[in-house]
Image (cartoon, rainbow, N blue to C red; front, side, top):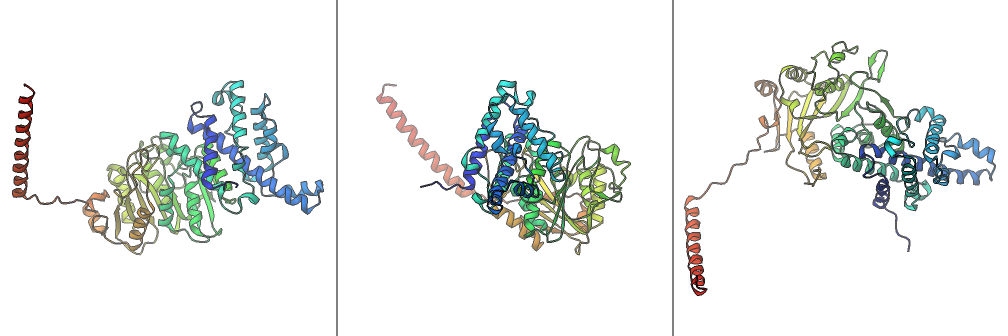
Length: 496
């Protein structure tokens, strides 16, 4: 009986392909080689299925088949396919052969893939070792992907999002392995799910992540819509991560996403007629308290994003928040992940925070558990902003104590996510969990948003019955005296 090929089995086999690089290449780097190769394998399997269909349709007429292949979603010349690369796996210049294939894939799909592979070099001595070692590793990688389990032909896997799920699985594992660098390109799936459910994107809306990393949060937002009637936008400063995001979008069948490469604060790429583009839904997990975030550029910002105040030179949190708020359209809403210092730090940040509250933009403050994010153990919070709020109160939620404990990483469970979402939607006070604060209360606290000021989670200790405790002490002393007596008898018998 043939063993059923499950998503878990596919994920496991794909993850084992990383063994070739473990201990040799840094996890934050070898993810690029694995994920690019997964992408090539996927495109090749798509082409293989389509070629079979066209052969039957055109009775083997190569001219008509070739013409049809050039009109496909992706154009993949034969020498760029995984199968062709597999036949060349023993060649002395296999790294160059793969690089040439990537170059030609870009050339044949410029509108979609231009620049995607520019930061990956399969012939790199620095990353992959001297020629003999490099060739050996590349051969192993190629052969790993020949496993029948990694067959992504639509005729094999159907319409399930198998390839997208595998890509996400790998990215999450790479983030876990990469330590501090992991948080730079991936927001934990459960946190992304929570943010998407809080925002509830709708059909025809424009979705935006200004620090999109590998794109996982954007994909969660898109899936929340429930149809394909939406548009996706993002920007990422790291070139390799930008490429991963582009591939991630294609693997999740989001071909119309506009993902720009560049520093969002210093050089925002999403604008029209010298004005920032506006969006219905904005979500992000920016780098925490980024130093050298762009204070000098902010002073002469052409888009006037920092009119409420310029954040401190060594803490860029409010730089990203300001950019996100200015990117909202008149009915827009947003969620941003922040370190807790953003809630209460003084000086410039206090003035910006005060201004946001006076404009009635802040809707909720949600405290999350510690050790949720890759690369940092500190607890974080979510800030929810809304344009044109009908209420003036602010909801505070302390969700820091409800999670699944993990050895390396804690995790939000489904019930934790749903409790946060239902409390936010009800906008209600719950004993020791949430509190609806008036603006006057926040003013009395000098616009300090530290959650314990609003949500009282103090648990009173049970009253101690002194008389009962005294009885227990006397009982224990009696038992101890009896034990000592018996011990002395045993010692006498033994001659001590």
